[in-house]
Image (tube, rainbow, N blue to C red; front, side):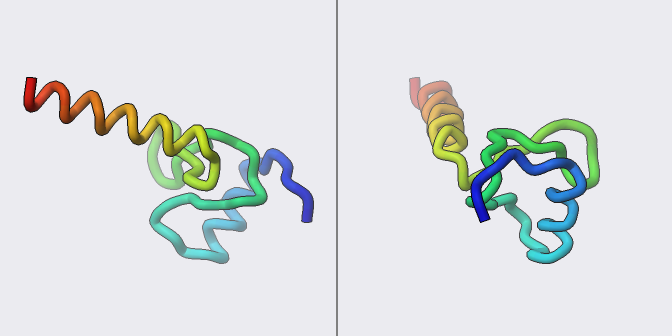
Length: 67
């Protein structure tokens, strides 16, 4: 199956099938996806940009705490 942007229905099917806490779908090219049960967005952790955003958030928190 080729990589493509998943629709909301495909994301819901993936979540139902995998029952995972984190969304990690290597076939999905979306960077952010809608949250399952609340309002807002969450990250697709299979997308490389998600790891950069996560690292930046952690770096900002560490900087704020120690400096």
